[in-house]
Structure formats: structure tokens, C-alpha cells
Length: 287
Ligand SMILES: [Zn+2]
Image (cartoon, rainbow, N blue to C red):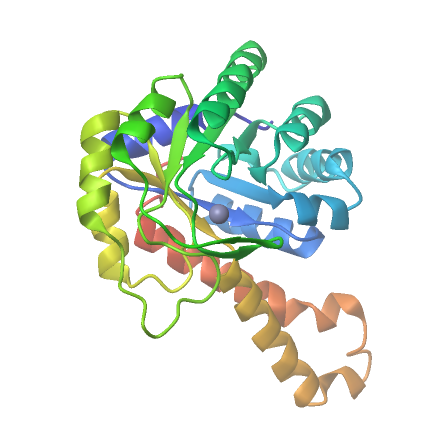
């Protein structure tokens, strides 16, 4: 059964570790992440962007697939199904479809409008027992065509949004989506500390987990980050393993063209990446 991310993140914040959000794209992705979480006895959040939602034929398809898999694979660790960077309309659709968690990304609105829309969604999520992630200060890089500059959030605005009663808060601290450029200045721990001070017990979310050095990840967790989003890294690992399989001509040997064989190395690579991250984030055996 899907659960809200509230309890797992409050426990993570208290226990000074972080729960990984791994974005899914299809059945293979979902299965690899769920199996790894179960194997490591770790809570997990499955992230779905609006683009991936469209790709997988709509939110209802995803809810059906994930619920079926939890039952079919005997998954007993806590699993949250979460909309990543949702629009207001996308959030309502996911509530309707049976997601257990949503992120409303109102960071591109003026703060008053972000607050107003977040306030409305807090009410809806409370009624449904769902968790809600809000965002203050846009996160750099490109995600589904939305390009942010990687700014640092205003800690007072973070407090204002946290006080609305959201479950977790994503705040820009110099992090960006996708691969980090060579001249990246690193995370702003000064900003993170100031946000933590203002928002107290609120689990903070670090987006753009791909390529942030391990020591920075650990420091961010020690300063209040309880959820870390990983997306690009699984994609790169999957692509590399698949390319190797084809370049080695394995699809031409016997029934190597069978998708269950052709996609297997990529699935293994996703599992390896998820395992590495869960170990780094400290969520192993915290289910
Ligand atoms: Zn993000």
C-alpha cells in the first residue's frame, strides 16, 4: 500500500539521514527501485514528473502499475508515490488518480501567489492524508523544459511557506538539475543553515542529487536535508549499460534481442545506483 511521505521524512529528519526520491520512467525503472528498497529495507519515494506522467499514459496508469507491483513483488517497505515539480492542475490530477504525495512547484510565481496556491493544496492534502512538498527559490538546470538559474532561497520566505503546514520544503541552495557544470560553486551551506534555523523541524529537500560530492551530501543531511532527489544518475547508468550490451553485439546473439534480456543490464545498473545512494543517504534498514 502506498503511504504519505510524512512519517518516513520526520523519522529521517530526527535520525539524521535522508530518504531518496528516485524518478521513474517505465516498468523497469519502477521495479528496479522497489526491489532495491525492499532488499535494503529502506523507505523510498518514487518521483514522477509531469512529462514522465504523460509518457506513461497518465497518472492512473502509474498508480495501477505501482500498486500492482507492491502486491506482486511483496514489497513491505514504506513507498510513497510522489508528483515531482507539479503545476497546480497537475497536483489536482494526482490527488484524483491516487498518488500519496505531491510537490507543488510554485517557485516561478511571486511569493504571494506561491503561498496562496500552496495554502489551498495543504488543505486538500490534509483531507486526503497525503504529503505535500513546496518549493521556494527556483532550482537551477532544466527539468521538463523549465529552466531555473540555481538561486538561493530567502530563508524568511521559506519560513512563510513552511508555516502553511506543508510536509517538506525544497529550497534552492545553489543546487541544479542534471549534470553539474565544471565551474559549479557547490552548495551554499550558509543558506541551508539559515533556512534550517527558520524552519526548525521541517524536512528539507535537496533536488538535483546527481553529481553532488558525497561529503557535501553528508553535510547537507547534517544540516536538515531529509529527502534527496535522484533522477539523471539513474538515466546515465541505464543508458551506459544498454549501450555496452548493444555495442558488444549481444542483441545479435541467440535471443539477445528479447527486451527482457536487452533491458536487463540497464535494470541492474539502476539497482546499483539506487543502492549506492541509499547507502550514502543512510536510509538502509530504516524501513
Ligand atoms: Zn527537482
